[in-house]
Image (cartoon, rainbow over all chains, first blue to last red):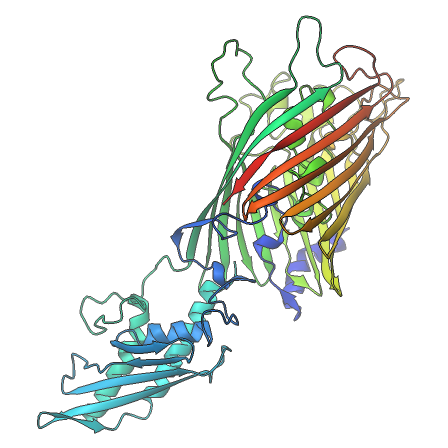
Length: 179
Length: 432
């Protein structure tokens, strides 16, 4: 009997260690409320009306527009797209194409360096959340004799921005994964 | 060159800090401004939702020999019911999922005893209470759920067919208009064990299997102890009742364990669950106590081409309503036979219409003072729904059941040994 109890206590560790395990979502358990017996929802959302916080319903399994892999709203990976927008949001946005996965900012001058300005272009390259799924290009100009002139950009800047996009995408994925 | 590096680094630094205080809505925010908010706690990880349910229906209830000389009830009535669900959930940056759920409803059964006039019983039958309230923590290791909630089998059950009418025999709606405990069917569905406050562990799924276990100290729920004195006259009101001055059929130290499998065979989706329910009995200070409750439960369902068929079966030493069974007293035998129950059901859905039915029987000891015969509850139900819109449907349901135990007086008047009940429910319901 003691061995049986030990085995039961070890069950969570064993199943977590199993490589083929997946987390079971709350809507996969039986709900004995009368509300649960009604097919569909007038609100269109199985979880009811959002009254506070972030709507993550589209990211749950079987979710609708915007869910990773769902092509109805975005042509590229939703996490990389949103992470790129967040990361470049300190610069004015010139254009954003969610189907082609291209974000182009307008020129931006840092307050600490008014004699130069930057422009960024981000390309999201596919639907998968991959480390090579985003490319960021930075363009720089300097003010010389009253005119903006193209100037070189530090080699690591684009890579740093790409890393920041990937980190933000990971954070978004963590926060909005199915509950 | 130094300026080049400074400017380029400034761009990267701006990007580094911007997401913490700015979102896509603040595209033109100044990342270098002194008023920029740093990384801070926000509501991004939290999601709070409210859901609701409303049901209005006409009900026709006919009970055999329910009326007595000088007192009678009609057969028809209108009734309604509401549920409000509040769901809060979130996910921490380390991946830990958390949340809480509260289900508020009005399902009080009885009018106050002093209702004599035509005034509505406001604050009585319409009083809101809560049905379930629980919180959870979840991760790759599974989920821990705590609160007033169904146990492990209740969470993982299969074969519970409620897709037609308002749920047929597998729901509690049938009993809302039945008057008198002897006219109601035994509660033997796994959800009828109750939402006693418990601790539940639910595992991840692997190779189609997931498992769970739950424990509750007693059959009560909610806060407080339930009583304000420990005496022979009040102790049975206490949640933590352990020894009763007379026989008591309540359960203690209730354990549930279950394993569920889900998968598919071509176009057929299938699920099956097996489980165990065990509980200690309250000790009787003046005679033999009840036996420990031990029972097995199994259920399965299959779905394909619009059809869903399923059912469940249970067997063990339990009495109706999951009461424990008393042992023989000295010199006097009691009926301590085991309990057995099953339910089979099916639904068929085509477009906006769903039809289905149930058949169920359970055999228990029933009255333990009648040792020669057990109790048998048998019933069937048919019903259908028409979905006007997602979350809004019309329903109609007919249920019929009879209860038999030779020598037991079920009816208020007339012959003993059996009773019959017919119920018609029709109306509409809304969920959002």
